[in-house]
Amino acid sequence: MLPVLRLCAAVLAAGAVLAAPAAAQSPVPTPVAPADGATVQAGTPLSFTARGLGALVVRIARSPAVVDACGAIAEDGGRFDGTPSPADPSLVQFMAPAGLAAGEWFWQVGNPADCSAGPVRRITVAGSGATTPGTPGAPAVSPTPAPAGRLPKLARAPIASRIGTSNHALLVLALGEGSPSVSRSRLATLVRNSARRWRLDPRGPVRRVPRVGDGHDDVGFAAALVSEGALGTTTLLRQSYVRVRRVCAATGCRTTRTPVGTRVVERDLALLPDVPWAEGPAHPASEEYDLETVVLHELGHWAGNLRHTPVGCHDTPMVKGLGPGEWWRSPSDWRYDACGSARARAASALDVPSLTTPRPLVTERVVEQTVVVR
Image (cartoon, rainbow, N blue to C red):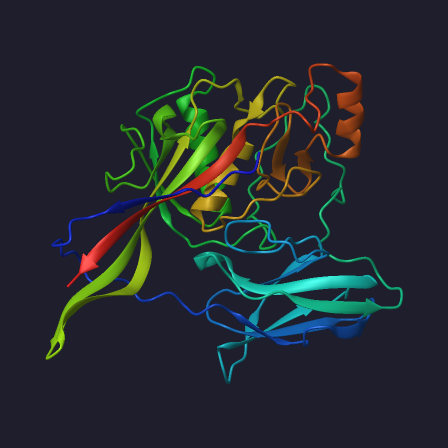
């Protein structure tokens, strides 16, 4: 069920000369403090310091295991944004104001925008204190369907930074292909609203179908671009620039290849048309897949967040697989079968899948191109 980030190399002709490359990637963030193996007191404010550039975050987890293709650990202990030092922007501080619960924890600094993650550091929390902030689970307001006769309103609040950050990219609504279960007007409403919640720039609509390599950043139905077993797929076309030089000396000649940077040159989001979509505003029935949840998930990838959250009772739309009858529309309006009330429903209804039933994926993929710069 784990979606795999597949890299397909498409090497251009050696003599091709394209535009100047983007700047080289920023160095991997480096943890500074607390030291590896340090001991702190439970339930007291805790600060972390790291070096790096960009919108860095600190992830805290019970396990040092990597959970995504970027090398990041989980966030069951919380995720915290950093504040650069005014005197030295590369020195960034993070604060966990409520501290951590007693036990062994692991922390890691990373940059979701460029999919970089630093080394994992261990920290021991002594004593008994407050429970860990940011732990996924049941929200403050129990996510239940709206009362009969009342439909849920479209949520418009920005997606929280604990779920993901934004690269503020542009997207174009492409309506060249439709779905028998979704009206064009409803698709446009959900894409535009979801894009604004991720702080993206929606444009369109236009009459075309998303297609990789056409130079357009499109969102729409396109069965040909959806990965096998998935409801939707976001494809990133990324160019890696390599400078090739022929160096000659008295002893002979040799060819050098030096990486000089990468950049995403195109994004495409494709949704599978022939799915029993729940277009809303009503919540999905037990045999329907929630379109708004899938759009929110895929636009999260579009905004630069490539990691997935494992299937479970997590307050986020970035789960790696979505079952029928499940949804996430806001922190106060979501339901997954792993949550208590949904587990009870699953036990008493044969048409609701269990957690062991394979779920359709919501995935991303990266297509690599190598550009030779002479």
